[in-house]
Image (cartoon, rainbow, N blue to C red; front, side):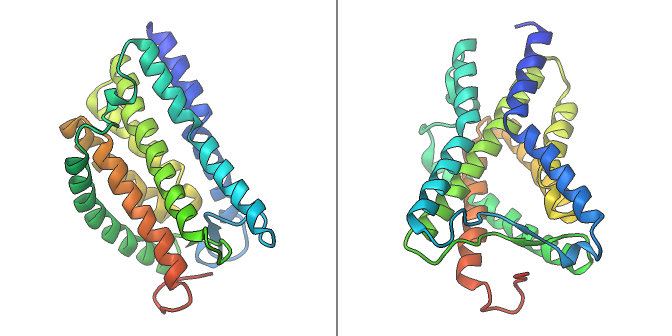
Length: 251
């Protein structure tokens, strides 16, 4: 493909996925900055209920949202196959090394997850972050399974698009390694900007680390595992602990 075709394809994929999320997050952050009071007095809600008093309808909406959020990943897989590559296997999302991917991902999740929690609490205390509410689902039988599915969806979408696919296309366009690292990490930080300045910097650093590890391992599998574990702990942990421990902000 020509450089122009690569750029157009990349822009379209991002416009249908995390590029649009970055613009939405920037608008949300601007709104939060212009609200009376500090950022710490405001909240950003994830995994909210769509029909609080109608559990089955709410479940249908949750599953619909998770499924449609993964459509850009399917599109990327199609584009990679059409290119003559091996689909998502090209970026290392397959079942060839499940044990290695999970082991690396678990260690990475422990390091980044713990550091990220401390950074969030510190940024919120300093007034640089909104209160992040990871879930606000009704207390029904499908609450935990939906939170786990949402965490997996987030990890697959972000690591395939912002690491595997983005880096491949930027490499093909002739960008340097440091350019690709900067673009990927800043994009990740920007679509988390709705959480505040702390969310931006924390995720940008995480993005840079993930890019370097992807360059070393050649697989997004460990990154998907790490991201999924971080989000599962955050979502499910909040559901189990909110209101029961004093150090966890709830509003």
